[in-house]
Length: 71
Image 1 (tube, rainbow, N blue to C red):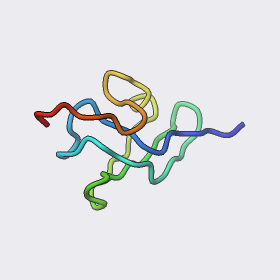
Image 2: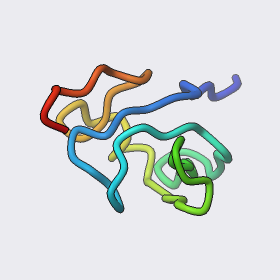
Image 3: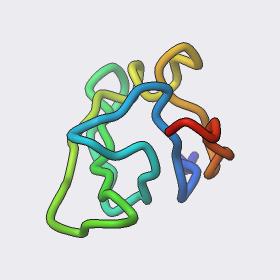
Image 4: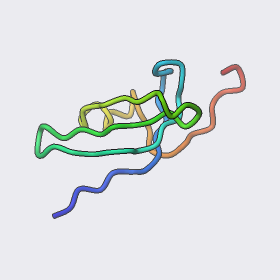
């Protein structure tokens, strides 16, 4: 069975100054799954995140969500 991950993500809070990320890599198996995300506005900003953290909707949402006007 294949493991599919959304291609774009929005962080609830800024991560290294950015909120919108795209999927670059994914790996691991079972409880060791991880993804590597790249900031949309700066490709030099990359995050490797455990899959369980990415699934937490209090931290991340799939897709690029509209940000509040004050951000």
